Length: 512
Image (cartoon, rainbow, N blue to C red; front, side):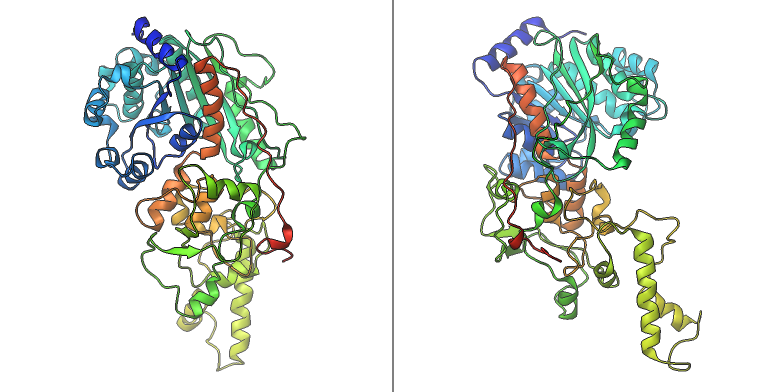
Protein backbone atom coordinates (compact mmCIF):
# COMPACT_ATOMS: atom_id res chain seq x y z
CA UNK A 1 0.00 0.00 0.00
CA UNK A 2 1.38 3.41 -1.00
CA UNK A 3 1.68 6.26 1.47
CA UNK A 4 -0.79 9.14 1.36
CA UNK A 5 0.77 11.71 -1.06
CA UNK A 6 -0.67 14.60 0.95
CA UNK A 7 0.98 13.31 4.14
CA UNK A 8 4.32 12.97 2.36
CA UNK A 9 4.07 16.54 1.05
CA UNK A 10 3.29 17.84 4.53
CA UNK A 11 6.34 16.12 5.98
CA UNK A 12 8.60 17.46 3.24
CA UNK A 13 7.25 20.99 3.69
CA UNK A 14 7.78 20.78 7.45
CA UNK A 15 11.46 19.90 7.05
CA UNK A 16 12.08 22.50 4.38
CA UNK A 17 10.53 25.11 6.66
CA UNK A 18 13.36 24.43 9.11
CA UNK A 19 11.97 21.77 11.46
CA UNK A 20 14.23 18.95 12.68
CA UNK A 21 13.62 15.51 11.16
CA UNK A 22 11.97 13.29 13.79
CA UNK A 23 13.58 9.86 14.24
CA UNK A 24 12.12 6.55 15.34
CA UNK A 25 14.92 4.12 16.26
CA UNK A 26 13.81 0.48 16.05
CA UNK A 27 15.97 -2.19 17.70
CA UNK A 28 17.74 0.86 19.10
CA UNK A 29 20.05 -0.74 21.63
CA UNK A 30 21.60 1.89 23.86
CA UNK A 31 21.48 4.44 21.03
CA UNK A 32 24.54 4.50 18.76
CA UNK A 33 22.48 5.41 15.69
CA UNK A 34 20.36 7.80 17.74
CA UNK A 35 23.40 9.66 19.02
CA UNK A 36 24.85 10.08 15.54
CA UNK A 37 21.55 11.31 14.12
CA UNK A 38 21.03 13.68 17.05
CA UNK A 39 24.49 15.16 16.49
CA UNK A 40 23.57 15.72 12.83
CA UNK A 41 20.52 17.80 13.74
CA UNK A 42 17.71 15.26 14.12
CA UNK A 43 15.19 14.95 16.93
CA UNK A 44 15.19 11.49 18.55
CA UNK A 45 11.46 11.17 19.06
CA UNK A 46 11.13 7.52 20.08
CA UNK A 47 12.82 4.13 20.26
CA UNK A 48 11.82 0.50 20.54
CA UNK A 49 14.24 -1.85 22.30
CA UNK A 50 13.60 -5.27 23.87
CA UNK A 51 16.67 -5.45 26.18
CA UNK A 52 15.88 -3.77 29.51
CA UNK A 53 19.36 -2.38 30.20
CA UNK A 54 19.74 -1.01 26.66
CA UNK A 55 16.26 0.53 26.79
CA UNK A 56 17.14 2.26 30.06
CA UNK A 57 20.37 3.54 28.55
CA UNK A 58 18.49 4.98 25.58
CA UNK A 59 15.91 6.67 27.80
CA UNK A 60 18.62 7.99 30.11
CA UNK A 61 20.67 9.58 27.33
CA UNK A 62 17.95 10.92 25.05
CA UNK A 63 14.97 11.59 27.29
CA UNK A 64 16.46 12.40 30.68
CA UNK A 65 15.57 9.00 32.07
CA UNK A 66 11.85 9.65 31.64
CA UNK A 67 10.13 6.38 32.47
CA UNK A 68 7.90 6.09 29.40
CA UNK A 69 10.98 6.37 27.17
CA UNK A 70 13.03 3.92 29.26
CA UNK A 71 10.68 0.95 29.14
CA UNK A 72 11.79 -2.16 27.26
CA UNK A 73 9.31 -2.84 24.45
CA UNK A 74 8.81 -5.93 22.32
CA UNK A 75 8.20 -4.86 18.73
CA UNK A 76 6.12 -7.99 18.12
CA UNK A 77 3.58 -6.87 20.72
CA UNK A 78 3.79 -3.09 20.33
CA UNK A 79 2.03 -1.62 17.32
CA UNK A 80 3.04 1.78 15.90
CA UNK A 81 -0.19 3.36 17.17
CA UNK A 82 0.29 1.86 20.64
CA UNK A 83 3.82 3.26 20.73
CA UNK A 84 2.89 6.79 19.71
CA UNK A 85 -0.08 6.81 22.10
CA UNK A 86 2.10 5.68 25.02
CA UNK A 87 4.62 8.42 24.24
CA UNK A 88 2.06 11.14 23.57
CA UNK A 89 3.16 11.60 19.95
CA UNK A 90 -0.21 11.56 18.24
CA UNK A 91 -0.86 9.49 15.13
CA UNK A 92 1.87 7.09 13.98
CA UNK A 93 1.44 8.22 10.39
CA UNK A 94 2.44 11.79 11.21
CA UNK A 95 4.85 11.31 14.15
CA UNK A 96 8.11 10.44 12.38
CA UNK A 97 10.14 11.51 9.37
CA UNK A 98 12.91 8.91 9.51
CA UNK A 99 13.00 5.30 10.73
CA UNK A 100 16.41 3.85 11.57
CA UNK A 101 17.64 0.56 12.99
CA UNK A 102 18.35 -2.99 11.99
CA UNK A 103 16.13 -6.01 12.61
CA UNK A 104 18.32 -9.00 13.51
CA UNK A 105 19.10 -10.76 10.25
CA UNK A 106 18.44 -14.15 11.86
CA UNK A 107 14.79 -13.14 11.92
CA UNK A 108 14.42 -13.34 8.16
CA UNK A 109 17.44 -15.34 7.00
CA UNK A 110 16.61 -18.18 4.62
CA UNK A 111 13.10 -16.88 4.11
CA UNK A 112 13.74 -16.38 0.42
CA UNK A 113 12.97 -13.65 -2.07
CA UNK A 114 9.53 -14.92 -3.10
CA UNK A 115 8.38 -15.34 0.47
CA UNK A 116 9.65 -11.89 1.45
CA UNK A 117 7.48 -10.44 -1.30
CA UNK A 118 4.51 -12.40 0.03
CA UNK A 119 5.21 -11.10 3.54
CA UNK A 120 5.23 -7.55 2.24
CA UNK A 121 1.92 -8.04 0.45
CA UNK A 122 0.18 -10.30 2.97
CA UNK A 123 1.87 -9.79 6.35
CA UNK A 124 -0.90 -11.36 8.40
CA UNK A 125 -0.34 -14.71 6.69
CA UNK A 126 3.16 -14.97 8.10
CA UNK A 127 2.88 -13.49 11.57
CA UNK A 128 3.55 -16.87 13.18
CA UNK A 129 6.67 -17.60 11.14
CA UNK A 130 9.56 -17.13 13.61
CA UNK A 131 12.01 -16.60 10.76
CA UNK A 132 10.27 -13.49 9.54
CA UNK A 133 8.37 -12.11 12.52
CA UNK A 134 10.73 -9.24 13.39
CA UNK A 135 11.14 -8.33 9.74
CA UNK A 136 7.35 -8.20 9.37
CA UNK A 137 7.10 -5.83 12.32
CA UNK A 138 9.81 -3.59 10.90
CA UNK A 139 7.95 -3.38 7.60
CA UNK A 140 4.70 -2.74 9.42
CA UNK A 141 6.28 0.29 11.13
CA UNK A 142 7.46 1.63 7.78
CA UNK A 143 3.97 1.06 6.38
CA UNK A 144 2.19 2.72 9.29
CA UNK A 145 4.58 5.63 9.85
CA UNK A 146 5.23 6.60 6.22
CA UNK A 147 8.74 7.94 6.87
CA UNK A 148 10.52 10.07 4.31
CA UNK A 149 13.62 7.93 4.77
CA UNK A 150 14.64 4.55 6.19
CA UNK A 151 18.14 3.57 7.31
CA UNK A 152 18.99 -0.06 8.09
CA UNK A 153 22.32 -1.21 9.52
CA UNK A 154 23.55 -4.77 9.71
CA UNK A 155 26.54 -7.06 9.28
CA UNK A 156 28.16 -7.38 5.81
CA UNK A 157 27.01 -11.00 5.63
CA UNK A 158 23.52 -9.65 5.04
CA UNK A 159 24.59 -9.27 1.40
CA UNK A 160 25.44 -12.96 1.13
CA UNK A 161 23.57 -14.90 3.79
CA UNK A 162 23.06 -18.52 2.83
CA UNK A 163 23.06 -17.55 -0.85
CA UNK A 164 20.60 -14.69 -0.37
CA UNK A 165 21.29 -10.98 -0.75
CA UNK A 166 18.90 -9.91 1.97
CA UNK A 167 19.62 -6.21 1.46
CA UNK A 168 18.54 -6.50 -2.16
CA UNK A 169 15.37 -8.30 -1.13
CA UNK A 170 14.51 -5.63 1.44
CA UNK A 171 15.34 -2.95 -1.11
CA UNK A 172 12.94 -4.39 -3.67
CA UNK A 173 10.10 -4.28 -1.16
CA UNK A 174 10.84 -0.70 -0.14
CA UNK A 175 11.16 0.32 -3.79
CA UNK A 176 7.68 -1.09 -4.30
CA UNK A 177 6.45 1.23 -1.55
CA UNK A 178 7.75 4.35 -3.28
CA UNK A 179 11.36 4.61 -2.11
CA UNK A 180 14.65 4.93 -3.94
CA UNK A 181 16.95 2.44 -2.20
CA UNK A 182 20.71 1.98 -2.15
CA UNK A 183 22.81 -0.26 0.07
CA UNK A 184 26.55 -0.33 0.56
CA UNK A 185 29.39 -1.37 2.85
CA UNK A 186 31.00 1.30 5.00
CA UNK A 187 34.02 0.83 7.25
CA UNK A 188 33.87 2.98 10.37
CA UNK A 189 37.61 3.72 10.30
CA UNK A 190 37.07 5.90 7.20
CA UNK A 191 34.67 8.10 9.20
CA UNK A 192 36.76 9.00 12.24
CA UNK A 193 36.01 5.94 14.36
CA UNK A 194 39.10 4.28 15.89
CA UNK A 195 37.87 0.84 14.88
CA UNK A 196 37.94 -1.16 11.64
CA UNK A 197 34.26 -2.04 11.76
CA UNK A 198 32.61 -3.01 8.48
CA UNK A 199 28.84 -2.57 8.24
CA UNK A 200 26.09 -2.88 5.65
CA UNK A 201 24.11 0.34 5.41
CA UNK A 202 20.83 0.49 3.48
CA UNK A 203 19.27 3.91 2.84
CA UNK A 204 15.82 4.45 1.36
CA UNK A 205 14.47 7.91 0.46
CA UNK A 206 11.01 8.77 -0.81
CA UNK A 207 11.02 9.10 -4.59
CA UNK A 208 9.28 12.48 -4.18
CA UNK A 209 12.55 13.77 -2.67
CA UNK A 210 15.35 12.19 -4.69
CA UNK A 211 16.06 9.91 -7.63
CA UNK A 212 19.26 8.55 -6.04
CA UNK A 213 20.82 8.19 -2.60
CA UNK A 214 24.01 10.03 -1.71
CA UNK A 215 26.58 8.28 0.48
CA UNK A 216 28.86 10.03 2.98
CA UNK A 217 32.36 10.95 1.86
CA UNK A 218 35.18 9.49 3.98
CA UNK A 219 37.01 11.83 6.34
CA UNK A 220 40.00 9.56 7.06
CA UNK A 221 42.19 7.10 5.19
CA UNK A 222 43.51 3.66 6.08
CA UNK A 223 44.89 0.71 4.15
CA UNK A 224 42.67 -2.01 5.60
CA UNK A 225 44.24 -5.39 6.47
CA UNK A 226 43.80 -8.17 3.93
CA UNK A 227 41.27 -9.98 6.11
CA UNK A 228 38.84 -7.10 5.83
CA UNK A 229 39.32 -6.92 2.07
CA UNK A 230 38.62 -10.64 1.74
CA UNK A 231 35.48 -10.50 3.87
CA UNK A 232 34.24 -7.55 1.82
CA UNK A 233 34.77 -9.45 -1.43
CA UNK A 234 32.75 -12.42 -0.15
CA UNK A 235 29.93 -10.17 1.05
CA UNK A 236 29.78 -8.32 -2.27
CA UNK A 237 29.80 -11.39 -4.48
CA UNK A 238 26.02 -11.53 -4.82
CA UNK A 239 25.52 -7.76 -4.72
CA UNK A 240 27.78 -7.02 -7.66
CA UNK A 241 28.12 -10.26 -9.56
CA UNK A 242 31.83 -9.55 -9.38
CA UNK A 243 31.43 -6.21 -11.16
CA UNK A 244 32.00 -3.22 -8.87
CA UNK A 245 32.09 -0.70 -11.71
CA UNK A 246 28.61 -0.98 -13.20
CA UNK A 247 26.49 1.97 -12.00
CA UNK A 248 23.29 1.11 -10.19
CA UNK A 249 20.00 1.70 -12.00
CA UNK A 250 16.36 1.43 -11.00
CA UNK A 251 14.68 1.85 -7.67
CA UNK A 252 16.98 -0.39 -5.64
CA UNK A 253 20.54 -1.66 -5.79
CA UNK A 254 24.09 -1.78 -4.46
CA UNK A 255 26.12 1.42 -4.61
CA UNK A 256 29.84 1.47 -3.94
CA UNK A 257 31.00 3.70 -1.10
CA UNK A 258 33.05 6.76 -2.06
CA UNK A 259 36.77 6.06 -2.19
CA UNK A 260 38.97 7.50 0.56
CA UNK A 261 41.83 9.62 -0.75
CA UNK A 262 45.29 8.99 0.68
CA UNK A 263 45.56 12.73 1.22
CA UNK A 264 42.96 12.53 4.00
CA UNK A 265 44.10 12.44 7.65
CA UNK A 266 45.12 8.94 8.76
CA UNK A 267 42.56 6.86 10.63
CA UNK A 268 42.37 7.41 14.39
CA UNK A 269 44.55 4.91 16.22
CA UNK A 270 43.82 2.97 19.36
CA UNK A 271 46.36 4.96 21.37
CA UNK A 272 44.99 8.26 20.11
CA UNK A 273 41.54 7.13 21.21
CA UNK A 274 42.22 5.81 24.71
CA UNK A 275 45.76 6.87 25.63
CA UNK A 276 44.60 9.73 27.85
CA UNK A 277 42.52 7.54 30.15
CA UNK A 278 43.79 6.64 33.64
CA UNK A 279 46.10 3.65 33.83
CA UNK A 280 44.71 0.50 35.42
CA UNK A 281 47.73 -1.53 36.52
CA UNK A 282 45.89 -4.83 36.86
CA UNK A 283 48.69 -6.94 38.39
CA UNK A 284 49.49 -4.32 41.02
CA UNK A 285 45.83 -3.90 41.94
CA UNK A 286 45.44 -7.68 42.14
CA UNK A 287 48.47 -8.02 44.45
CA UNK A 288 47.15 -5.23 46.68
CA UNK A 289 43.74 -6.87 46.94
CA UNK A 290 42.06 -3.94 45.23
CA UNK A 291 40.88 -5.98 42.24
CA UNK A 292 38.52 -8.74 43.29
CA UNK A 293 35.94 -11.09 41.87
CA UNK A 294 32.38 -9.78 41.82
CA UNK A 295 29.93 -7.53 40.04
CA UNK A 296 31.49 -4.53 38.34
CA UNK A 297 29.25 -1.54 38.85
CA UNK A 298 29.51 1.60 36.76
CA UNK A 299 29.16 4.20 39.52
CA UNK A 300 32.85 4.73 40.31
CA UNK A 301 34.46 7.98 39.18
CA UNK A 302 38.19 7.97 38.43
CA UNK A 303 40.13 11.21 37.95
CA UNK A 304 41.72 11.65 34.54
CA UNK A 305 45.03 11.95 36.43
CA UNK A 306 47.89 13.60 34.58
CA UNK A 307 47.11 12.04 31.22
CA UNK A 308 45.64 15.20 29.77
CA UNK A 309 46.67 14.24 26.25
CA UNK A 310 44.45 16.44 24.13
CA UNK A 311 44.44 14.78 20.73
CA UNK A 312 41.57 16.03 18.58
CA UNK A 313 39.68 12.78 19.03
CA UNK A 314 40.03 12.98 22.82
CA UNK A 315 38.72 16.54 22.75
CA UNK A 316 35.72 15.33 20.76
CA UNK A 317 34.99 12.51 23.22
CA UNK A 318 35.32 14.79 26.25
CA UNK A 319 33.51 17.74 24.70
CA UNK A 320 30.59 16.20 22.71
CA UNK A 321 27.72 18.64 23.09
CA UNK A 322 25.26 17.35 25.64
CA UNK A 323 27.57 14.48 26.61
CA UNK A 324 30.60 16.31 27.93
CA UNK A 325 33.05 14.55 30.20
CA UNK A 326 33.75 16.08 33.60
CA UNK A 327 36.95 16.05 35.65
CA UNK A 328 36.63 12.31 36.06
CA UNK A 329 35.89 9.27 33.92
CA UNK A 330 33.06 6.81 34.52
CA UNK A 331 32.75 3.13 33.63
CA UNK A 332 36.53 2.56 33.61
CA UNK A 333 36.22 -1.02 34.93
CA UNK A 334 37.74 -4.29 33.69
CA UNK A 335 37.20 -8.02 33.92
CA UNK A 336 38.72 -9.99 36.82
CA UNK A 337 41.20 -12.41 35.19
CA UNK A 338 43.86 -13.24 37.79
CA UNK A 339 45.45 -16.09 35.80
CA UNK A 340 45.81 -14.11 32.62
CA UNK A 341 47.19 -10.66 33.47
CA UNK A 342 50.76 -12.03 33.54
CA UNK A 343 50.21 -13.66 30.16
CA UNK A 344 48.94 -10.37 28.70
CA UNK A 345 52.14 -8.68 29.92
CA UNK A 346 54.33 -11.04 27.89
CA UNK A 347 52.52 -10.70 24.58
CA UNK A 348 53.58 -8.49 21.71
CA UNK A 349 51.11 -6.30 19.81
CA UNK A 350 49.22 -8.43 17.29
CA UNK A 351 49.86 -11.68 19.18
CA UNK A 352 46.89 -14.04 19.30
CA UNK A 353 46.00 -17.18 21.22
CA UNK A 354 48.73 -19.52 19.88
CA UNK A 355 51.37 -17.04 21.07
CA UNK A 356 49.53 -16.58 24.37
CA UNK A 357 49.35 -20.35 24.91
CA UNK A 358 53.07 -20.79 24.23
CA UNK A 359 53.93 -17.97 26.61
CA UNK A 360 51.66 -19.41 29.31
CA UNK A 361 53.43 -22.78 28.96
CA UNK A 362 56.77 -21.03 29.41
CA UNK A 363 55.49 -19.43 32.62
CA UNK A 364 54.35 -22.83 33.87
CA UNK A 365 57.70 -24.41 33.04
CA UNK A 366 59.50 -21.56 34.80
CA UNK A 367 57.38 -22.20 37.90
CA UNK A 368 58.29 -25.88 37.83
CA UNK A 369 61.97 -24.90 37.65
CA UNK A 370 61.50 -22.55 40.57
CA UNK A 371 60.07 -25.36 42.67
CA UNK A 372 63.31 -27.29 42.29
CA UNK A 373 64.18 -30.88 41.47
CA UNK A 374 62.43 -34.21 41.90
CA UNK A 375 60.38 -34.41 45.05
CA UNK A 376 59.93 -30.65 45.34
CA UNK A 377 57.75 -30.35 42.28
CA UNK A 378 54.59 -32.34 41.46
CA UNK A 379 54.93 -35.38 39.24
CA UNK A 380 53.93 -34.97 35.61
CA UNK A 381 50.20 -35.54 35.04
CA UNK A 382 49.47 -35.91 38.74
CA UNK A 383 46.49 -34.06 40.18
CA UNK A 384 48.82 -31.52 41.79
CA UNK A 385 50.68 -31.02 38.49
CA UNK A 386 47.39 -30.47 36.64
CA UNK A 387 46.16 -28.05 39.30
CA UNK A 388 49.39 -26.06 39.08
CA UNK A 389 49.26 -25.98 35.29
CA UNK A 390 45.67 -24.67 35.43
CA UNK A 391 46.94 -21.65 37.39
CA UNK A 392 49.19 -20.69 34.50
CA UNK A 393 47.85 -22.14 31.24
CA UNK A 394 44.39 -21.50 29.72
CA UNK A 395 42.54 -24.72 28.86
CA UNK A 396 41.68 -23.89 25.26
CA UNK A 397 43.22 -25.80 22.37
CA UNK A 398 45.55 -23.39 20.55
CA UNK A 399 44.70 -25.05 17.24
CA UNK A 400 40.95 -24.59 17.63
CA UNK A 401 40.87 -21.04 18.99
CA UNK A 402 43.54 -19.07 17.09
CA UNK A 403 41.57 -15.81 17.21
CA UNK A 404 40.27 -16.05 20.76
CA UNK A 405 42.95 -13.68 22.06
CA UNK A 406 44.50 -10.61 20.46
CA UNK A 407 46.74 -7.92 21.87
CA UNK A 408 45.85 -4.61 20.26
CA UNK A 409 48.32 -2.54 18.27
CA UNK A 410 48.62 1.04 19.52
CA UNK A 411 49.31 2.58 16.11
CA UNK A 412 46.25 1.28 14.22
CA UNK A 413 42.49 1.42 14.79
CA UNK A 414 41.12 -1.46 16.86
CA UNK A 415 39.66 -4.57 15.30
CA UNK A 416 35.87 -5.02 15.40
CA UNK A 417 34.36 -5.00 18.90
CA UNK A 418 31.88 -7.81 19.45
CA UNK A 419 28.75 -8.01 21.57
CA UNK A 420 30.19 -10.73 23.82
CA UNK A 421 33.18 -8.57 24.80
CA UNK A 422 32.05 -8.70 28.42
CA UNK A 423 32.43 -12.47 28.50
CA UNK A 424 35.46 -12.62 26.24
CA UNK A 425 37.60 -9.52 26.65
CA UNK A 426 40.60 -11.41 25.32
CA UNK A 427 39.85 -10.17 21.80
CA UNK A 428 40.92 -6.66 22.85
CA UNK A 429 43.90 -6.84 25.21
CA UNK A 430 45.34 -3.41 26.04
CA UNK A 431 48.45 -2.59 24.02
CA UNK A 432 50.29 -1.28 27.13
CA UNK A 433 52.10 -4.24 28.71
CA UNK A 434 52.45 -2.39 32.02
CA UNK A 435 48.67 -2.39 32.34
CA UNK A 436 48.43 -6.01 31.07
CA UNK A 437 44.64 -6.28 30.97
CA UNK A 438 41.60 -6.32 28.69
CA UNK A 439 40.08 -2.97 27.78
CA UNK A 440 37.63 -1.30 30.14
CA UNK A 441 34.00 -0.42 29.48
CA UNK A 442 34.94 3.22 28.88
CA UNK A 443 37.77 2.26 26.54
CA UNK A 444 35.38 0.10 24.54
CA UNK A 445 32.99 3.05 24.39
CA UNK A 446 35.79 5.31 23.14
CA UNK A 447 36.70 2.79 20.43
CA UNK A 448 33.04 2.84 19.31
CA UNK A 449 33.07 6.69 19.40
CA UNK A 450 30.69 7.05 22.36
CA UNK A 451 31.56 10.29 24.22
CA UNK A 452 32.63 10.25 27.84
CA UNK A 453 29.33 11.71 29.05
CA UNK A 454 27.25 8.90 27.53
CA UNK A 455 25.81 6.68 30.25
CA UNK A 456 25.26 2.93 30.19
CA UNK A 457 22.61 1.34 32.39
CA UNK A 458 23.31 -1.90 34.22
CA UNK A 459 26.63 -3.39 35.26
CA UNK A 460 29.84 -4.19 33.35
CA UNK A 461 28.75 -7.13 31.20
CA UNK A 462 25.47 -5.53 30.02
CA UNK A 463 27.41 -2.35 29.23
CA UNK A 464 29.95 -4.27 27.14
CA UNK A 465 27.07 -5.96 25.30
CA UNK A 466 25.37 -2.63 24.58
CA UNK A 467 28.61 -1.14 23.25
CA UNK A 468 29.49 -4.15 21.12
CA UNK A 469 25.99 -4.24 19.59
CA UNK A 470 25.92 -0.52 18.81
CA UNK A 471 26.45 1.38 15.60
CA UNK A 472 29.44 3.72 16.07
CA UNK A 473 27.91 7.17 16.60
CA UNK A 474 30.43 8.92 14.32
CA UNK A 475 29.60 6.52 11.48
CA UNK A 476 25.89 7.14 12.09
CA UNK A 477 26.53 10.88 12.12
CA UNK A 478 28.23 10.72 8.71
CA UNK A 479 25.26 8.86 7.22
CA UNK A 480 22.78 11.19 8.95
CA UNK A 481 24.52 14.36 7.77
CA UNK A 482 24.43 13.39 4.10
CA UNK A 483 20.86 12.12 4.38
CA UNK A 484 19.66 15.31 6.07
CA UNK A 485 21.06 17.39 3.22
CA UNK A 486 18.95 15.40 0.79
CA UNK A 487 15.85 15.60 2.96
CA UNK A 488 15.98 19.38 3.22
CA UNK A 489 17.23 19.93 -0.31
CA UNK A 490 20.73 21.18 0.45
CA UNK A 491 24.12 20.16 -0.88
CA UNK A 492 25.92 17.92 1.58
CA UNK A 493 29.14 19.25 3.11
CA UNK A 494 30.49 16.71 5.53
CA UNK A 495 33.85 18.47 5.71
CA UNK A 496 37.18 16.89 6.50
CA UNK A 497 37.43 15.92 10.12
CA UNK A 498 41.07 16.80 10.54
CA UNK A 499 42.47 15.61 13.84
CA UNK A 500 45.34 17.19 15.74
CA UNK A 501 48.34 14.87 15.76
CA UNK A 502 49.33 13.64 19.22
CA UNK A 503 52.20 14.81 21.34
CA UNK A 504 53.90 11.42 21.53
CA UNK A 505 55.92 12.38 24.59
CA UNK A 506 52.70 12.57 26.62
CA UNK A 507 51.10 9.36 25.35
CA UNK A 508 50.53 6.52 27.76
CA UNK A 509 52.96 3.78 26.84
CA UNK A 510 55.01 6.00 24.52
CA UNK A 511 58.40 4.54 23.84
CA UNK A 512 57.49 1.17 25.33
